[in-house]
Length: 326
Image (cartoon, rainbow, N blue to C red; front, top):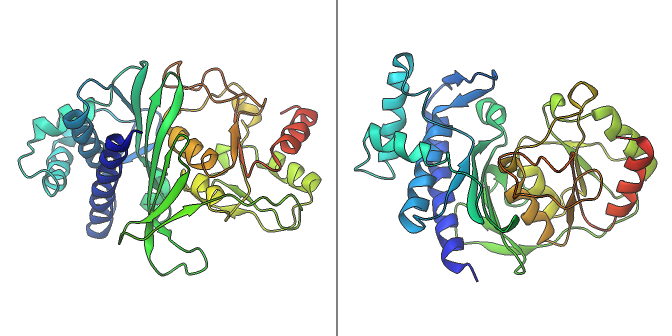
């Protein structure tokens, strides 16, 4: 089931990861600042162009809802960046022109439909700029439910116990078929499962490097009630979902900070990661225990925050959060 979609998504993510690593190796990062002041890099645009081209070629009727658009590139001040991006895309698609690249990027401006793809070309842009963790996150959604998710994490080691060896992994999940972890450097592949630990001393919480992403005071309060004693892991991007799926961590939270209490998450920030965890035996809901609803647009407008866990502790976590009035 979805074998063609899976093959296309894996190939596109592999190619995009190679492009991103090429950019990172060759440049001191030149970024463009979006209107919300968040940075976007040459690799963001190149990655989105390459993946959207692959989706357009193989699934021309499927809309794509992605993070970036080409409007900024078309400004005169960014013309040289547009040409740079095109040169990188040409390493994957030799006939690409600047106009092609803009069209492919803007293919990501699609609308949510019964069946659509969502893409974050570089999730964890600040991590990418720092030379740290980031993810390329692609998911296929049908009838509001994620059916396929691929996370490419080029700087994440295959074995967390050997952090300098075999860096670069793909997490791939298809609904009903489990989650596998594939090396970006070879065909090495294993099925992965979450931990089933409930003992607080064994549990590990993982959180964003960026403190603005979640209410960390609530993380510490919840960890104390669970009896968690291990130091929290910190990691950029949806690589955190991969860490939970392979048992490197047991709990990941996104709790809106008091000044952003009405904040709703972007679909591309969670779709691929959510299925990677659930197909590995974990559970992902919002803070109220509701399933994530990907049918309503670019935002998870019907959901408040995120709880991703090994499943065994999920109900306990939700109960504690309810009492904390998150």
